[in-house]
Length: 151
Image (cartoon, rainbow, N blue to C red):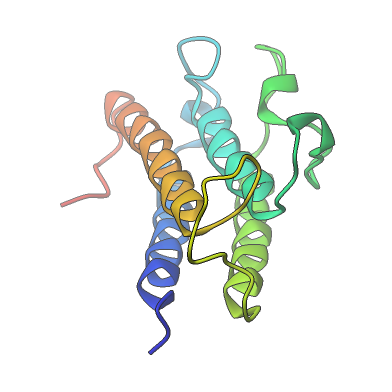
């Protein structure tokens, strides 16, 4: 067993939960929200953009470009993404993350907390951040009348 296997398993669980929650919305409720970030599609995109950005080990957000063509912050209130697009992005980000876990020595296990240095602490932090936004998305699902995915 690799030292990073438990963390990798938590990422696998996160991506599975994200797929399940994204799929729980109807077409109508998927695009309903309460402004700024509080739309299901935007919460999902935000969580995924942050994971994707950090796992690419970029120094600045301005260096980041996702495969969708726009980051979550670049969408106006009147725009949205389909569940299919977001589910495809979940799979893409998951593949990138799993590839990183399979790359020997990619994580700096003895962190010096240097800015922009990707390490285990960063991977744990960004997973917690993603779960936080997943929780907001799951709360919107329940508020909009969908059955909780967490029984």
